[in-house]
Image 1: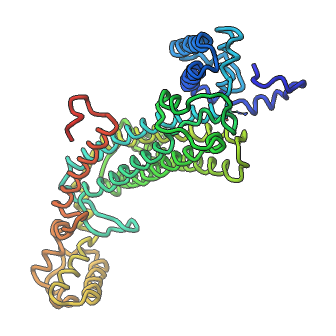
Image 2 (image 1 turned 90 degrees about the vertical axis):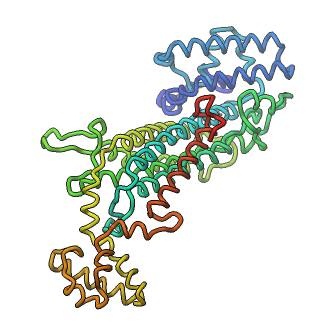
Length: 475
Ligand code: ARG
């Protein structure tokens, strides 16, 4: 069934039919399509555009289709249509006869598809936020359980300074927290009703868009019909929010992949999230994380393709916009699955504090602290830096560490060297405790971060209504 046959005499090239159909993809909007149509036809009834009995007859037909679709998960299997909107109208006509043709009075697929896509995106944002909260809780749980574990901190992937493993995990929690808030911003701009915008100019029928918007759970109505039918900013924003989130997860994946190699040995993935080799019996590969890293590239591709679709489009709906669903659906699926799995991987890692500690001792991570201690004794920092650098070189040349050199050896390069400096040089814990600044890695500061993060997460859960009823008023 075509919604636009009258103007045409000839048939479409079958390849073009296949090329242009979107039913295979937008069938996942079916329940949104039915919901928007039901609300719209009821509004037509209230506004007196349709007789009450016509409106309720159409609504009943749409409700019957809704029940059918809900109880037949494979409803679309043998169906064909140009798009989901055409399918619904065709099916409605089978259900209630020609009355079905009154459904699209005053509305276009342009305002319809924009409305449905926004509803879909709103639900997807909530699902993403919920899973992000779960991943945040996994990070928090690991941070709590391993509060005092020391990890070599890296810059340039070279050993830099000791940090707490919990501090490290909380860095990723900060990123995810920003991701959730970015999704929230995106939600606000998505939460706007296009219906009533018609094909581009608005509708000639006296419908109340505010009332219709309220029925469909929108906070506002779109202010400009031309914009409302051709705007896909919300798709771009959502894909960007997902892309950046997956970029964060990709960085975490990369860290964990490195940390789980025998050369590092800081942590192990649970067997549930690793695979082996068909050839090398000893292998345990971090495929989950590699795939998250890989899929973050695909996610970025979806964002790029959506941005490219919009660039240069003449204003008003253009069929190019149909490509939004390829980008959106695949992007959202990829983001959600990656996020859920990342949360599970984090929750189930086994860490090896001893390995982390050994690595801290080997990498001269206290060197800055030694220089700072010299500064405390009046040596200008530049000079202290030079002296400690020489001592490091001395140790590297002899394949030794700060803890193994003698007092005399050290004094040839650092004249002020004594027991106290030696102590500073061998104690990662001392170095940590010195980073006693807001946001620093000193244990008391990390405890503060933990508390703040706990509060932020429980606030999120309250906002997203993820807490059981009784707990909603407690923070
Ligand atoms: N399948 C189309 C889409 O997803 C629906 C809107 C088509 N509108 C039109 N005038 N051809 O964008």
